[in-house]
Structures are given as C-alpha cells and as structure tokens.
Image 1 (cartoon, rainbow, N blue to C red):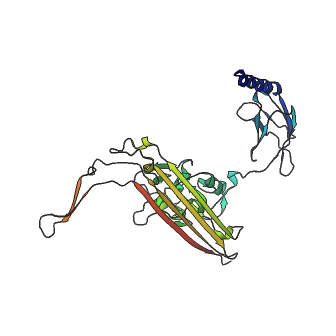
Image 2 (image 1 turned 180 degrees about the vertical axis):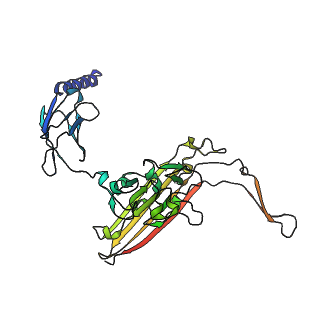
Length: 358
C-alpha cells in the first residue's frame, strides 16, 4: 500500500516524458493593416531560443521538448508585443498573430517646453513625459514617487511622504529651485518658496500627465525656472466619454523595522507604528458638453521614520513654559514632558468646475 503513491508519481513522470515532443511553430506576422512585418522577433520566453521573420513576414521556430510547455513572445519595433502559450499537444502549430501599432514616445505631444502643443522632438529643451497609463500602473503615495525612474531627476527622501526634487544643480534640504506647477498654476509654498509636494491636495487618480522640463526655462516662465520645470496636468471632466465617473483607489505600505536603526533614540517594532495607508476617491461628471465638475479627496495616515536630534531635549525631559516680562525673573506657568510624535495625518480635498466658452 505504501508503494502506491510512488508508483503513481513515476507513472505520471513517464507519461509526461512520453508525450513531450518538439513543436514546429510557423506562420506570418502582419500588422493591423494586413502588411507583413519583416525582422520581427519570435522568442521562447526565459530562453535564448528564437527566430526572425523574413522580408515577407514569414517565420519558422522549433521549440525543443525540454522547453515544453513554453511561452512564445512576438515583438517588433513600433508594435505592441504579444505572448502565446503552447502545451505540446500538437507537434506542428501554424500561427499568424496580428501585431498592433504602439505609441512611439518620440511622437508624444508636450506643452510645457514652449507653452504650446508640439512634438517632443521639436521641443527646445529636454522633456520627459509620464503618461496617464504609466501613472496608473505605478502605485504611489505622493506624485513625486512617479519621478523616481525618470533620468536626470534627483530625488532626496526626507520622510515617508516628503521629498526634495531637483533637476539642475545640487539637491539640498531646502531645495526649492524646481518650478512646480499644476495646471499652469504655481504649486509651491509662496511665502517660503519651498516645494511641499505632500501638501498639494491633488490626488494621484486625478493626474492626466506629468511633464519634466530638464533644461532652463527662464525665457518662458521667468527667473524662477532656471533650474527646470515640473508641470502636472489634471483630468478634465469635459474630456470624458461617459457622463459620470467614480474612481476609488487604496495604496498601502509597510516599512521594515530596520529602516530607523540610526534614529538616535527608541524605535518601535510594532506593525501599527510602521504602516501607511492612502485611500483616494475621485468623482467627475459632465453636465453638458461644455460644463462639468470634479471632486477628489484623499486621506494619508501612518507613521514616519523615527529620527531624534541630539540637540533636542531627551525624551521625558521636563519642559517649563512661563514668562519673564518687564525685567522680572522667569516664572514657570506650566510644565510638560518632551515627546516626539511621528504620526502622519493628512486629509485633502479638491473641487473644480470646468466650462468651455467656445
């Protein structure tokens, strides 16, 4: 009786080896207009086994039995790649997939470089564009998180939700040289000239496009744009196909306990002190073809990295509050103990009405 499981396992292995066979894959690659695609790549995923289509788009590929079941990728420059699975039940398979044209980044239209619509190749400065599709697939707590993989953008994290962003020059704790705009309006703190990205009420679900001008833009934006421009554009309710849309998203994060080992003070190992959650909601409606409104809101709640300054009082030290006016000695009016609160709490809302006169 004990040999039955071993017997069945050996039987299944022998059956798999017996039925495994090479797959001869052939066909013709065409685009969505029926034109043949020469030089396309046909690769067995995870291996170096592949082939190229000829001048007429025809191809032929043999998948060894050792790689069955296999996933084959069909790709070509300027076309969206496709993947197909093959289980080896047939030794000869004819497949002629139709590759759809993909959006080429060089043909993107930008408006931040010259304050007019133009192709990105015609822009007088280096511009990086983050499309709505790319923003959707990247989970983030703040909009700065989308810039971390953009070339020539220096990001210095100063907390769980706070960052300093710099494009030209050196980054620093008070770096505010980057001109930051949302829908062509200045978004930095005007009195301090600091880019407090975490204080902007615009939610990630309302971002339509982000453009980063990496060259000087003083001629267009003024002297404050000598170190680059970050232009964010939000979605318009007038551009919707539907009359109403509701978008709900939740982003969560959990930092490791060792992230604050150099805090200089006590570090909590409780999960409740290391989480961050960010629910967002966006409601947009189009009353007529020329009048619409949108409302977005978000809540950020969590706990930031622990950090203690040696120049500050120690935790638990007594703090005396009082006065010593008119040359009199200082008189203590109240006493408390020094504590540090690392909790993050943010509640933001943004409501706008859009109308078109033309």
